[in-house]
Amino acid sequence: MATLELVNLHCHRKQDVSGSDEPRLKVDGVPVWNGVMDKGDDRNLRPTSVEFDDTTKVALEELNGSKAKQIGADVTIRESGNPNTVHFKTSGAWYELSFEVS
Image 1 (cartoon, rainbow, N blue to C red):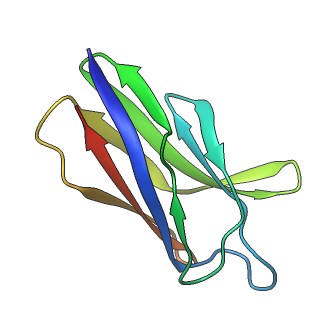
Image 2 (tube, rainbow, N blue to C red; image 1 turned 180 degrees about the vertical axis):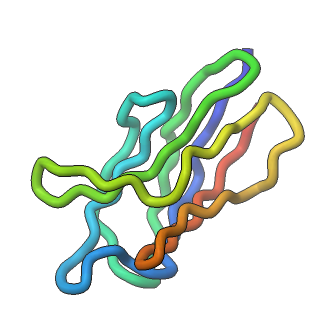
């Protein structure tokens, strides 16, 4: 059993042309964090953590009211051998997620 600890989310470029983004992180399809961000913002995600076996999938969505648009592809996190950060990108948005696995 491993623990995925979400550490920080950084917005390099937001999705919405006007107003703030409302990003939502999901782990294995379950929402674990949401907030409001603008370009250049950082959000401390601690103490958000999820236990998993072998692998887990992380996704980032941007909410517009009740509609969600996924930013980039799902990222697979393994019990070991992961980078320290992963990127979620579309033609408009770019977010960077820092995490730790123990």
